[in-house]
Length: 242
Image (cartoon, rainbow, N blue to C red; front, side, top):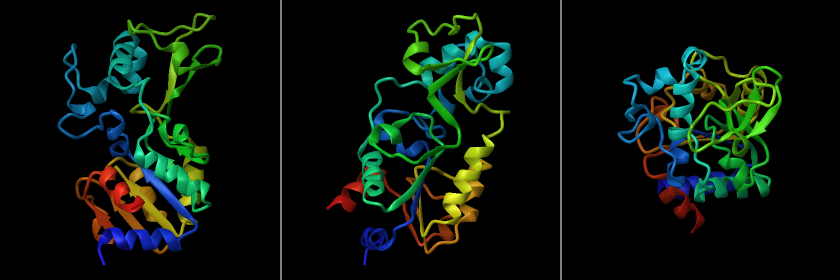
């Protein structure tokens, strides 16, 4: 039996699946991941500062003009659409097989595909709030082609509701994610190298039957997985749909 056949069988037998997704899931939607050759961390910047530093809390506070220029240029994809994998996982949820989607992504594509119970560990570009009066804005309301600092009607800077370096994950999101993972009978980890903590450590809370890792490259957890497939997720989903 091939890994794909085993995966098909495991999905068929499971009714409490949790999807744990990372940046690799959205590359087929035209959104770069972080660590590959074409990823965000290997992008050139016009101020000779590493991308990891630019998307930190301290840099945002001290250099909001440079932050937003990079953020709108490299991290916001207004026209991105859910790909085959997003739609497949939404379909599994509709069939009553998926408990929750836990995602490290900030692109809102799981929701656009139709997934209802999405736990966003790192926030979302879709939500933005004024740091002064706390009024919320959608992405389309704050995005501008000149990549200028967005300001609220009260004069405050509008910050993306995303977790920057040096910021803590939302406690409520952590609790919901750990609860879902610990109650799952199957955990499908997709498009993440599992190197970013604390999120990567969440896999330790899984007590179910099948741990599945779908990623182009090997991960530290491969040896603990029931099934580990190293391929483009698009190829995997196409095989599952046959």
